[in-house]
Length: 319
Ligand SMILES: [Fe+2]
Ligand SMILES: [Fe+2]
Image (cartoon, rainbow, N blue to C red; front, side, top):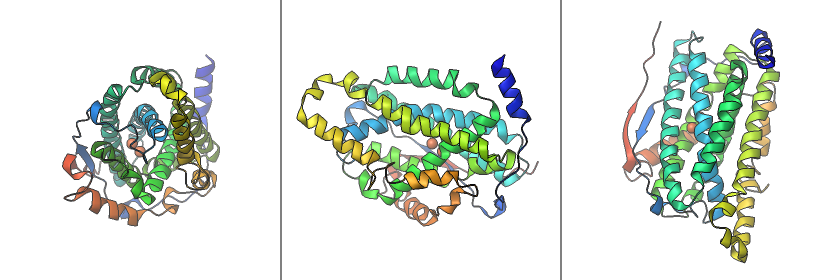
């Protein structure tokens, strides 16, 4: 009953938009790329990220939880696409849904393979699926919409960090992990403004946007790191008795949270920039990086090229 009352009051809220909406017609279309990577657990390098096991396991945990976040994005984007009249924005939402659907599929395949690398996939899938099913997916649509925009902000910041640190992908010979993460990086940056534009168009409340941001923050910088701490205990507890393990863990925490050059530690200013009332994802211009990586990764000899199957650009429908 309480949840119905909360849902009703959320749905009733009408808000003033804080920012000017961009001209969608000026935006280039986004293709949905199909990849066939074919992961094999025995080939997965658990030190893939900068020759560090702890940081690689953090990304493995992110990979498991990300699939549920992507499912939330897909469901929410599908629901709200019906209310969009602009045919270009509608087309962009279809691209977002298509890209996220393939991310979710490939990360699930990667997660299956992680099982062979002794990562506790089944347990973490159980936790992730239930948490999303009984908590986040029960939220009223406006809150899910703001959470979708919040999640997409985090993946955009992460993608931009990775685009600026290309060498971090080349510490290992594990070409399949490299293809997965670089392809995902490219597409997260490519579609980074879509969820936000939909949010601003259909709702626009600053307070609700901040709520979605804090939910995404709680999940990505709270739940995921906290659950990563248990991975070594569940995986190979005997390793924890060695000095090598603790040295690796210490370095790994720095690689993720270090204020100087850590993935999230050094980008905290950009993460919090989302709370600026007139924030827009394109305030952080990544077009040159996008062009560079599209050329580099997808053409012959590029990290994604061996696994690329086909791409499809959704048509613009005028009705
Ligand atoms: Fe994604
Ligand atoms: Fe995304």
